[in-house]
Length: 197
Image 1 (cartoon, one colour):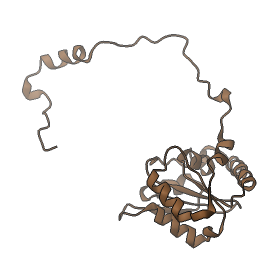
Image 2: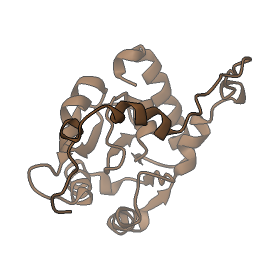
Image 3: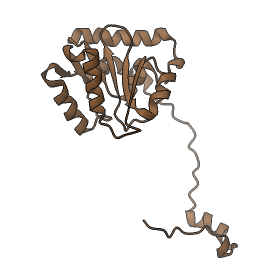
Image 4: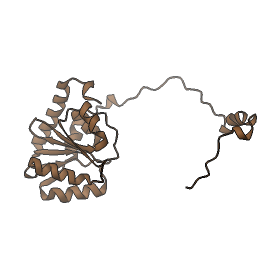
C-alpha cells in the first residue's frame, strides 16, 4: 500500500497504537523487518521481500529512517512516509547489517532500549545472528508488539465463496498443442536451445 492510499491521519493512528505498545513494553526503538508491517506503518509499494529491509521506528514521533536495497530507494521516496532512505548494495556488494550499524551509531540508537521484530519470514538466520550480536544484551525480541495491533478480526478473513461451481477445461496439453504443430513444417517450429547450460 502506498502512503497515498490512506489519509495521513490513518497512518498516524497506526503509528500511535504501535508507540503505545512500545511504551508498555519498555522499548524506545523498534526495528521493523516484515515488509507487511513496514507498509502498515509508513506505506510503500516496494516488492523486494527477499532482501533485507529495516524501519527504525522510534518511540517519539518524528522523521523515520529506513534501509532497503538501493534499487528500492526511489519507490520508497515516492510512496512512503519515511524521510530518511538508506539504500544498500547495488553499486558494490554490501552487508545490510553494516548499514544498520552505521545508522544506529549516527543517530545514537545504541543508547536506547531496542526491540527487534523477528518475523517468521524476511529475516534469514545469518542476518538475525548478526543483528543479535550487533545489538548486544540491550535488545529484546518484540514480535508480539506488532502482532497485538495487526491481528485481523476473524470476520475480515472470511472470503466469499462462489455459489456456482466453475467448469474447468481438462483436455490434456498434447490434445491442444498437437493440431497447432501438425500442419507446420519443421523450419517454422521454434528452435530448441542447444547452448551451454
